[in-house]
Structure formats: structure tokens, C-alpha cells
Amino acid sequence: MDKFERTKTLFSILLEVISKKRKKYVNSLGQSLSPDEVRALISIQPVPDELVAIYTCVRGTPWDHEDTKLWGLIPGYGLIAINEINEIINKFIEWRNEGIEQDWQPDMIPFLQNYSGDYYFIRSLEDDNSIVSLIHDAGLYSSIYQNIEHFILTTIDCYKKKLYVLEEGILADNDKLDFIKLKKQIKESTKPLK
Image (tube, rainbow, N blue to C red; front, top):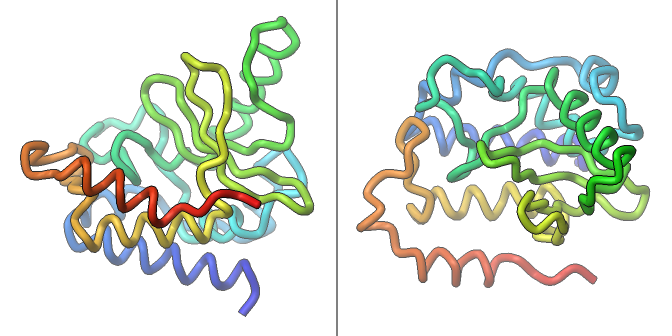
């Protein structure tokens, strides 16, 4: 099984796991696209096969989605609607041209965002498809996953172990969520990049 098929299978499993608690959320992600349509909609090339695989399952959540309760693949972050990715890329290009300091690199394709302007990106380099996080206040990115597969497997694990307790987009039962356990789980499941 190649990276594309493996990622598509894993992402489908993730959607299944999420749908047990949040069926409306999964249904709100929209219809899938063909691989060629996904590649044509993203300006940074080449688009990693793993990212293409995700958007052949769903389209993502529009920024202005009517029901904010249905926003969030992981706590605080929504899967960016495929047709909004270039708008975000263009914003980073504009900031760079204006001399606004951001650690964004031209090979970084955004795929998750929060309402504060923080993003998860996939690197689109031939030898680097790691996942990086860019926190707008810091302006610096940090590598957080070796690849999308690692991100998906960690996310599935967090949902199955009830470390992510999302109910239609709201982090529910905060008093029951063991943040120390979550932090330890994420630390154990994320290996440093080599």
C-alpha cells in the first residue's frame, strides 16, 4: 500500500472514530474531491500525497461555517476547507513581502487552523513532509509530527483513549479531562524528528 492509500485508509478510520461521538461534525466536512482536483486547488506544488489523500475523503470546514459547534478536527483546530488554503498561503506571502516577521516557509501548506490565527502545516519538500505548528504570537514554527500518518495515528489514539473529549466542537467536561495524561500521551507518541 502506498502513502496515498495508507493515509486515506487511516483518515477514514479517524473519521469513523470521530463519528461515534460527533456524527454531525463528520457529515459537515463536505464531499470528497478527486486527487487531480485537490492538486489543482493548492498553489504550492508538489502537494504531498498524504495531504491529497485527506482531501479525497472530505473538503474541510469553511472558516465562516454557520454552526461553530461543528468546527474542530482536534481540540481548537479545524480542518481548513480546501478552497481556502490558497487564501491563507497568499496571506503569508503578503506578510513576507511586507517584511512582517513570520517563520512561514514557501513549502509549508496549511491544513489545520484555529480562531486565533495559529496553523498546522505540512512541509512539501521532497525529503520532508513533517507537520509543523506556527503560533502567530511567537511567529516561529516548530516540528510536531514526523508526517501526516503520525499525526493521524496520534489523533486516533487520543480520541480512542478519550483524551480528546470533543462533543460537536466544544471541549466538553474539562474537569474530567486529564491534561497531564494528555501531555504525557502526546509526548510519548511524538518522536523527535531525525
